[in-house]
Image 1 (cartoon, rainbow, N blue to C red):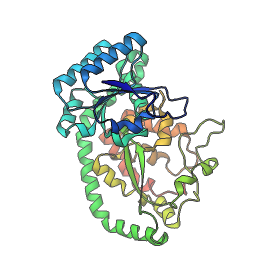
Image 2: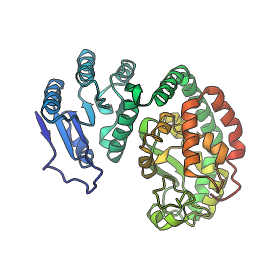
Image 3: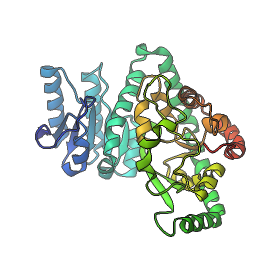
Image 4: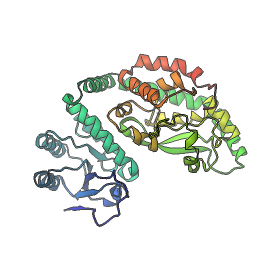
Length: 375
């Protein structure tokens, strides 16, 4: 069975949406939201039908989907054959392949990644908006990694990154687990005090912990935690404060980051938490879960991350999301920070990250996190 969504679901009104994806599986409800983000989505129940569709689409129309989603039980040889078939039949086109987390077991995920059969594993039904941006990210990075003639310098840098990550990843993860677990236990009394202070200021209204979706390494979307430092409807006031953004461009170009000096949405307790960086403490749970690392590039709100899906900037997403990082110890709290400087620091960390470098950043973090200005 193969079908598409041209008539079943409405499309978003955007000139940018011209992509398509192929879903292989039977749980169609998982992709209902994601299908509204694409011009076309195609459905296949098995790998053989998917092969026939890809062959016909490429032969007759000269087109292929921008993403393949696998949502069927994992069978090593069948999946190896399918991915190998794609690579051999469409040599000059790299189609990102994502596996649905709910259709696979943890030990199988490890095997898939070791065999280089997929690009990522995500919970499709919760991904929604992030799926489209992740597709763009994977296509850009995969294009460079598989076609070094496109950019020899970038290819060499990305290859070195993958090599360095394979050597130090286990040690870095072990350090993250130990440090975050110890810190959570140590700071538990402080968690309680901060929660009480926030509740008293808001007269018991609203949650103590603010959560939002952020983009981390490989454009992985995850729920990011902070102590609430702003009024309950702060997100709704974002557009009204656009003119106060310290990253605002002078030449009317679209800005990537958003930060306001003396942000009027910040509460009294929140101002103290932000200037002392105590609002960041709940991210220790993100580190323990594996969404983030102690040291890395700052995870970005989706509206900021989508502006970095360019050839020059996508590389910053090859580094893990972190509580602290090169940007924080270099420029955090300074009013003269430019978008270019911040992106450059993020890319520099992604290219040159090491355990020694992480250690030096952690040493500088305590003083860097005590801000001198309310930025």
